[in-house]
Length: 190
Image (cartoon, rainbow, N blue to C red; front, side):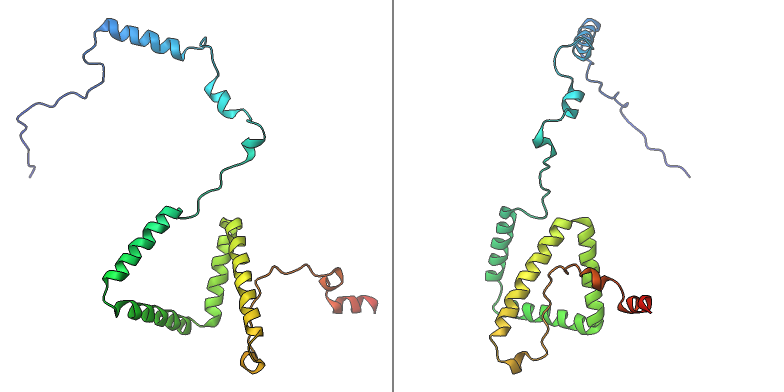
């Protein structure tokens, strides 16, 4: 069963933009348009102007923005501070405690090896997509690792015994003698 909707008024034609103009006006507009777009117009070719090399500055690309600007961060911080001030006093400590509890629970549920594999896989993906940002992250991790290592050096030896802090520094190239297997060298001599 089809339902038909009755229309009381007829449909209006789509406006073309030239409805109120007479034929002579349309022809005049068309002549001006052809003159402007014609091949004998003097001035730079827009396609050629876009493709010409602008010198040494042409190779410098603007750095892509990775994230929010300072004003956006400032706005978020002010909004967050206002939200914290309006909350009851117990909400912030409970939220921090539950967040830490969630992180610790995930760590014990997934295990140390799986967490390490996930972090390494995430870093490799970041390194493929944005090498500059990955290097910046590695440099910051190396800086903070060095600071923690220096701080633990001031603690008593019994407190830090067996503590391993990664350095996040790039691995130096091995000398040529260590790049080959020593057993292959010995078998070649025999």
